[in-house]
Image (cartoon, rainbow, N blue to C red; front, side, top):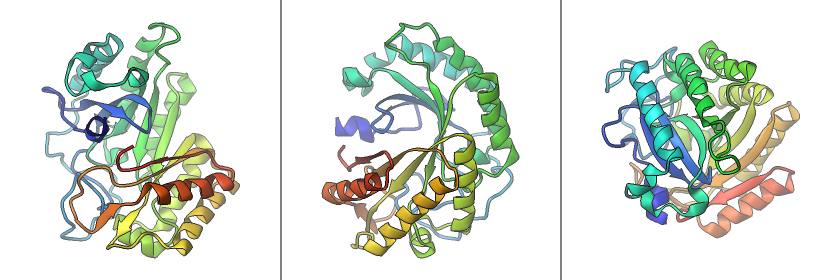
Length: 304
């Protein structure tokens, strides 16, 4: 089961944009849509997609650069997504390794996730992709009532570009048309600038991330994803955890709708050896502190 949860390959058969994942955090099947491969405003020390940092990452661009795989083909995205929905809803996906090992409780479609091997909000196709996904998501209605909930769109983001108008046009259109519920799963790995610089290594200031999170949480349900690990052999300090908790409190007090906090650690091979998984005991302690402040929290260890 560990191997199944650790298998987050961005490739599936001959697909270019769409891939399936058994997600431990979604507790079901997630259809990933890779909108901006190879482009990110972070170079996280724990990243499994990018190699070691050789130069400072750029600031937030308006759009992602020309993509290595030729950009987003919306007609191809429609075909791939239609086929993947049919494969999951019809159960055919569970005939293919490693998905044939999926436990029964996870054999449900939870979401269509804008994520992949880069930061999805940087894609010039973001707004159009949201419209397409909202349209196709309607097809899940009426499929085995009680078994298949209507999927939601999940935006998995580092929050550095949530201020771009195209992002809000795409997400707000889903809500206004009643097409799909949109939920934002946003990264917040640090409470201080120093730890943020060490973990995420971005030139985008932490204050910009926090302001974007506040704006996002006032408009859509927000799930905070926070990775903790031993960096250069040291776990995060007590002061750092306190500062991170204070950031969560400030977001909620500012009006952000924080539906939950996911406390997790390294689960896949990283590009750099300076980060190691935090122990389950330490993760449980952090999650308990989050709950003590009135948030819903869960934790995910390296093998969970």
